[in-house]
Image 1 (tube, rainbow, N blue to C red):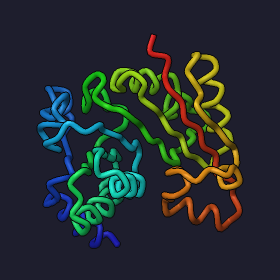
Image 2: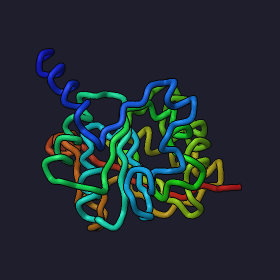
Image 3: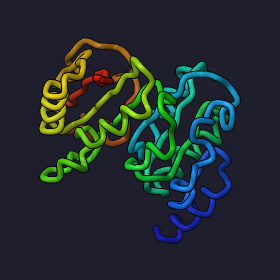
Image 4: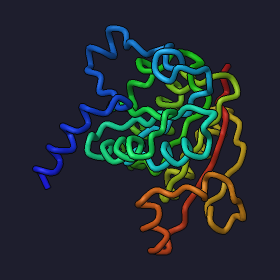
Length: 221
């Protein structure tokens, strides 16, 4: 397994759509910050970001469905990013990029108003570590600095605690809840949130676990 990972890490270096900036790259002026459209995608289409993208199922799935939009997946684990990057190469997708980085650094990766939409798919609920939750006020403040006015955030999770916590944050910070459900696959919706599934989501559904989902807009004041 270790040898296979090393092969994947080496192959990651060959993918033009997978960026692995160093800490210095990010904090000394990341070259694509404010230039993703012209410097990477060569178009002016809106950009959607998947945070903690894992194998990039949503990044790739949405990119296939919406060729008129650009998609970027961010994750720290190179082994996971290999799978998404390999799929992009195999399918010849031109509207996808991946960045190996911590989600904490989104403000160094993207400029103000550069992002139209954010997907957060099955993040660690970080029980007992509120500041590390990707829907905590700490992280929402970061997203506020990169989202365009009217930008939407999606949360999809199997963790009811995180779902409830996020609902409370939205209410307390006066964000705008657009739609929510604590049992997605019994909600009757047929949009992207059910048409695309992650690997682990499929496993949890087989186990009978309920999937929670909500989407909201930030109070930009």
